[in-house]
Length: 103
Image (spheres, rainbow, N blue to C red):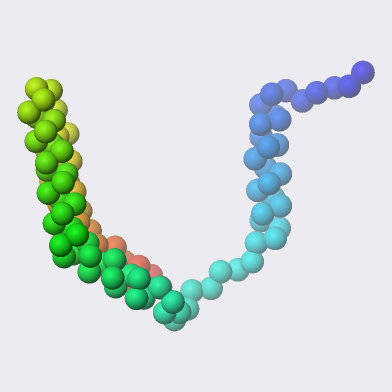
């Protein structure tokens, strides 16, 4: 007669075994002065801080206004465009400075 594990133990084994294998074969990651992604980071940052950020903010605002015009009012229709504008305007320099400080 074969004995099977309960369902929860089989589920745990489905996650623990691959995690142990990955941990056994994982190598160390070293942060250095690699400049491979600097051009892409600069272009993406310039895009978000410039016209791209303005376009994203205006599209978000337009989506909120369309939602308001459809008759279903929600605070999210106002808060999301404001949050997107603030995030695009100030979020990129904050994230860039944090990543630069950590690396």
